[in-house]
Length: 392
Image (tube, rainbow, N blue to C red; front, side, top):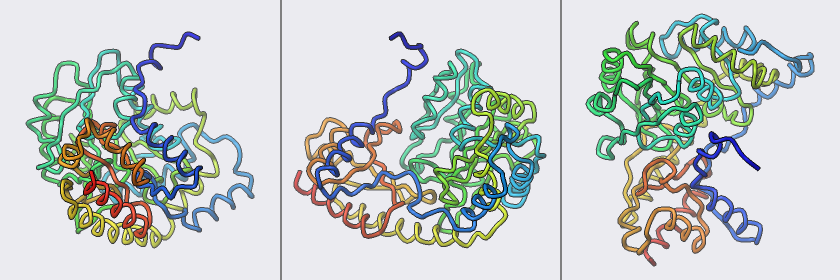
């Protein structure tokens, strides 16, 4: 069967082989420790579940407006004002089927064939694919490990051409957990304002920040930055609502209208009762979020120490999200492995630990470990990693 060229351009996931092998080993009865989860290991808070159930019982099971119910858009505006000091009107908000859907629609709305989007390395795996599907060109800029994987204004300026449409800023970051400071964001914003390029601010992990770090939305820095920023956020990470698929975008009214039109011809609307759950998440108690964050912080500290105690592995302490991005280049070299994918595959087959190789994030010397799993599992998994490195 002949397939469209756009589908053929999509790069197969680097993690598919690891995931398939892990499932196969589990089915055969092996005790596989999974350290790759990209979602909290807590259930959705009960008051959010109750709100969705109530909505269904009251008949909220039909279509809504493509951009979301008015109550939720209003609550998002209030959240952005309260938490981020940014003022938006409901007409500047579109609710989507997850933050990923918001990003997809955004690139479809702003990218013409050949337009360039600057993507810092390491990057979330879907950024380049979404840009490519919009007939755009991802332009990669590598953040150094010495700078906690963050790019500098000088690097950004050097990457901008007359085809540059936007730059992606993901803070806190997946996969690194890095957090940009206010001063760092001001430097990046200054370049974008000077060059008049959009800033795509992916803030999905904003609530998961540690060590007294401050989350700053680049849109809040100045009126000029506000005009050039599209904020992407959602319910998945802070409220453990990954399966609910509720995200949103906030930005220029004309752009939001274009994204809404795309939704109207693709998904119609976000799941109706899930929107009422999201409303309860934003307006209700934040106690569960704080509990989850405290547990993640406890695991984070333990994992950093345990991983840095392994000879041949070192990692920067993450300041946000729930990922550790570890450099395993010395361990790979010692074991005679040609690349990180081969190293991760051998780790799974010999010690039954499944994690995500950094090649999928544009970082071939690294691995991503998620600490969105129990401390017991983390300790067991890292002990096996240590054994694997020492014996190879």
